[in-house]
Length: 109
Image (cartoon, rainbow, N blue to C red):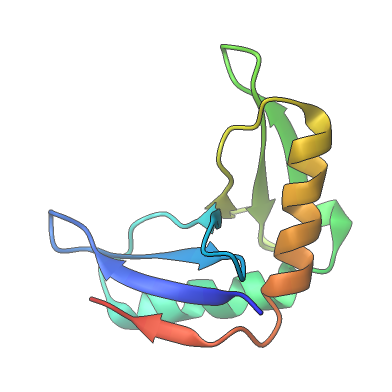
């Protein structure tokens, strides 16, 4: 099972990563001003993770595929790493779907 890991940024804001069971980061959030905002972001990932329509498959300037996960209001709640191919990206999406629901939260802030 994966986990959400909350941490503080150098500027004092909060952010979270969703990590797979092997410890690899599969989704990273934006920075939030408050801990409550960060936890709401985690809840939003859990609510939206299973819905394939919430994933935007994208290509970076260097050609690397990646994805974002959006809330029902269209706001981006998480961004993946860059992948070397689309199959890797699709595996990343499958991993978010598998690991996000009910994942424990580890607060390292």
